Each structure stands twice: as C-alpha cells, then as structure tokens.
Image: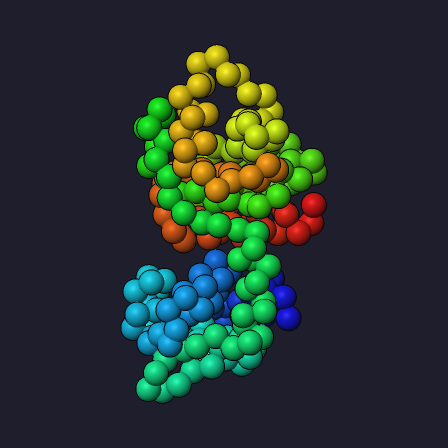
Length: 205
C-alpha cells in the first residue's frame, strides 16, 4: 500500500464520523513513529498537538492498516509495510526551517527533489494559490536550474542578489531540478500539509 492510499484510508469517515485529525497528521505521525520508535501515546500527542482520544483513533486506524504495531508497554512502532510506504516520501520531500534575512523571513522550508517538473504542469502562481488556500500567509517558490537559484516565472537578479544568496545558503544540499518552497507562518503542521500537496503534484507530474 502506498503512502497516499494509507492516508486516504486513515482519514475516511466511519459510521458518519470524520476523524478530528487530517491527512498531514497521519503522515507526520508515521514519520515521528519511524524516527522515535517505540513511542508512547503521550509523546505522540505532544508532537502532533492532538488530544488523547484523537491520537487513540489515529493509532487504531494505522494499526488496522498494518503500518504500525502497538505494544501496551513500549508504545507504537512502524512495521515493514509502514517503512516501505514511507520510502518514496523520504526520498522526495525534505521539511525544515530557514532564515531568509534579506526579506526578514523566519520560515518553514519544503524541498522537493526533482520537483522542477511540477512547474511544467502548472504555473507558479497557480501552485502558490493552492499553498495559500492551505493556510500559508506568504509563499516563495524557487528552483535550482543549471546550478543557479531561480525564482520563476522570471528571476530578476538586479535587486535580488541577497535573496538568491539566502536561498542558496539555506539549501546547501539542493541539486539541479530541486524545487524549494518557503512559507510563513513557520508552522510544522502547515509545512506537512504543503509537503503533501507538493508530493501529490510530484507524483502526478
């Protein structure tokens, strides 16, 4: 089962009740469990900033899908099925923080490996609008092309030298054809929402 199918299944309404968590909570939970396993429910509640009953439901759903196992003493652990599902996400999406001093941004950063292909299917302004609809106040989208930072649709180097330098410094491991998105406010849950949107776009490009 791929990660998008797992997320869809885990967020389906049951008996008319929609879970109180969303798609990005499911993804974030799996990544936290994979990194910190075995992890107890109280710790997971803190990481996800969700209540006890909501996290219980989420863990139950993930266990039913076979992507985690839950030990009453040790806590939750990822299964082989879960690890496999996260491999593609881990190889494509990187989520972190960045400081773009030239424009006074302390922000979340989402890197999509090979993500420049997303902009072959849609205009940068359309992608930015989708990200704003998810809850971002401000969005900056850049790509690495021919070893240079570009700000599509057109990079005006004059007056943007410092910003381009900030982007380069914030993403030292970025390679050609990577897409880097910066968002305000700096919010991890929002960053996962945006990461999920970009991941779906990457898959469909």
